[in-house]
Image 1 (cartoon, rainbow, N blue to C red):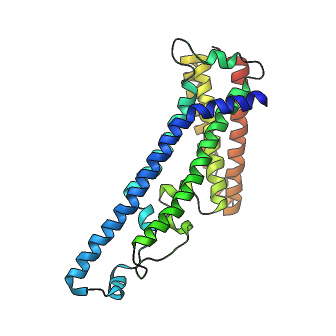
Image 2: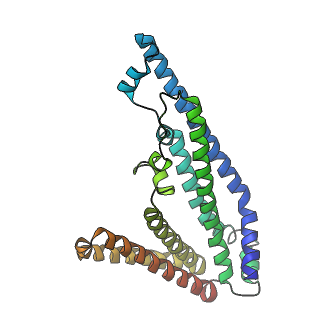
Image 3: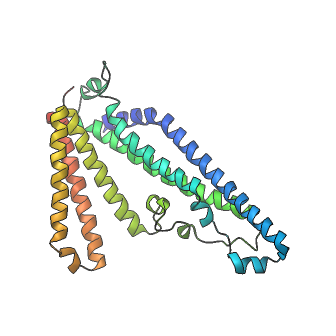
Length: 275
């Protein structure tokens, strides 16, 4: 446990500059989205008034409806900020491994030569990615509350309509994947997501342990998993299940993949990978 905590602290110290930049970039984009949406509405409202409707907000509401925080979360700059955060974390989830296995003086030799289980190296890296994802979620929730406060202050009270933040993200929005409105969706998305991350790390460790041979074996494993999934779906079992049963089957499958990937990663680090 001591080795894990020391490595986790070390990985966090290496990630915090990248993470700080990512949070600042996301915050700046979303702040711009708030004011961009406000000015877009203001210009349209001014043009509407110049057409002879003056200050008749009732007529405006009949024609265009109320304005909500959903206008901000559907703004292209806001959506781009969410996509940037997602791809930024995906990039770092891969980079966190290869930064130690590249270069002439590979740092991986020192990491894997430390006393104790090598699995602590994997656990520290995985826990770091988990911390980055969870921290970004908390940061985004705080930003949403702040953005709603600012946006509601900019828009006239008779035009702005207060809605729960859960309604601010549509099913087609990246925000609904990053911050699901229902706990059941959150459990489903992130159990599948962490299972995929674990399997992704299995492919990376297979590459690091066997180089091009590892890439070939990882490709065979990926094709095998995909084929097994297709065959399972073609059996028609899922069509005979209720929605709640399908939900728990997906949770169970994700858990099996997560545990299987974790076990495979443990074996690769302890028995196969070399520096």
